[in-house]
Structure formats: C-alpha cells, structure tokens
Length: 137
Image (cartoon, rainbow, N blue to C red):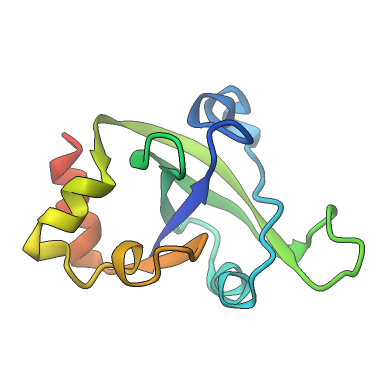
C-alpha cells in the first residue's frame, strides 16, 4: 500500500462532503497539474490518502481510500487529466495543522512543506504513521 495526501479547499469540497458520499465515494476531479496527475496515475486501489483542507483551515482532517484507479477526468474537456475515486475512511481525532507539520523536525522532508502547492502528493510510511499518531489514531 502507498500513502498520499490530497488537498481540497473546504469551500469547494470539504471533508464533510466527502463523508456524505458514503461507501460509494466520489471522483477526485479538478487536478490540473502534471506532477499531481502523475501521482494520481500511480495510485492503486486500496491506497490511503490524508484529506487536507487547503487555504481555509490548512490542516489534515481525515483519511480517504482509493476505490477506483485512474480514468479520464470528466471535468477536463481537453482530455488531458485523470481522476481516481476515493471514499472517506475516518476522520483524525485531532486535525494536524500545517503549522504543526512545519514545526516538527520529524516531518521536515514532507512534501506538504517542500512542494506546498502540489495538490496530490506522496507521503512516506514513516510520515504516515507519525501524522496518524499526531492525529490521535
């Protein structure tokens, strides 16, 4: 299993909206960056990702699971970009803020800091375990 982080502005798509989609989940649409697209292509069914609220909140709030591997993004008229389907797995008991991540030396190499604008990014196994611990899981 690989681990990831996906970002969404809560005003556009929030954790609560993701949870409401239930077991069927939803397509992770709207990615328009080629590096983020490459990460979507690498995602496999069963992989897990942190759900991060960007701009408002700036915190990791939950965990989603990939339920369907990449296919063309139905919102991309040019046909260049892809989506994966994800479903909510569980919320973090305590959201992990961007400020916490930046202040923690154990997370200094995390893509969330190094590639702050990237909307779909890899997370190492050690980072995953540590952030889960910080989040009360």
